[in-house]
Image (cartoon, rainbow, N blue to C red; front, side, top):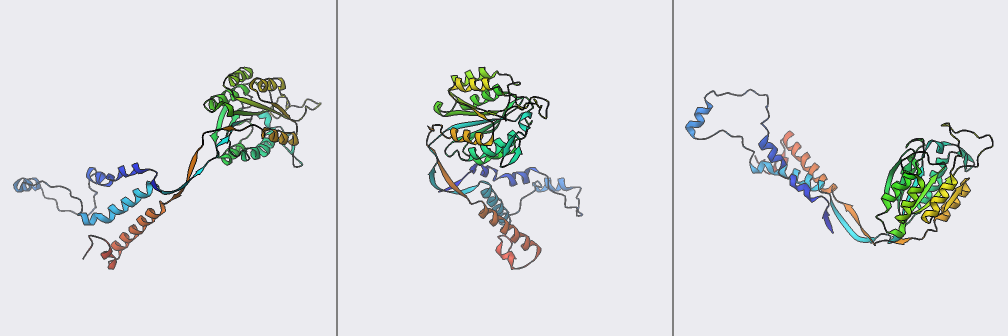
Length: 336
């Protein structure tokens, strides 16, 4: 089926003629004969000097080029048969701690020492891609919480946003309560049985405006299930401080466990890449919730054809003006 995505573009059709009428004529710079008594001649003849447009034959090529450009700008496309989108799945928000402590390199990935955030990006990037039929979104939180990617079926883009995150990008503190509150705000309009938040952090709440347990009660009231994941290797015996001057393993497990219990979720502890991978497998067992069926059309863009025709006609007009050849006969109004 043929369709114009932006048909309102054709409202610009009279624009060149309106500009030609409204703007003063251009000064060619050539010498001109000035008649001081022109107004007297006009009064005697009963006519008034006016600026006229070229004849309609001369305007045809220019009008055709303008029409082709508008047609291309209106985005002509051919819509194929409707294809069904996944009719079941979850609305899953992933809230990832990007505070300064997530830069602490106490995790292992394929034999290399990596930071906590790097490990989350490696393993949960694949977790996002494998969420077939789910709408996935991403929240990044540090001192404040930000919606980095809204709920979408475009999982590759969500993974790209996760891969681009860096420690400290949202501040060096940890606003767990704000992250939960933002997730509740985004999920409350979705079907109740499909509202899922996976929260990953390595610390205790020390920022933001909402207390985590209060945010958990709000989530429970809105039927948002929160799964919490505490990440970080076991605390070292020397009590080492992280790069930003705080305890590198300051994880508030009781609060994370209480958040999960209040909302009907589960708490997981990830001390290594194997444990974090197992957590991803466990989250795969979440029951999908039915959503409204949707369909999408595969659209083939056709704007290149009128754009190419406008370019070809413009080249013919330029050639017709530069070289007095038989090309003149191809353009209306240019007959010798």
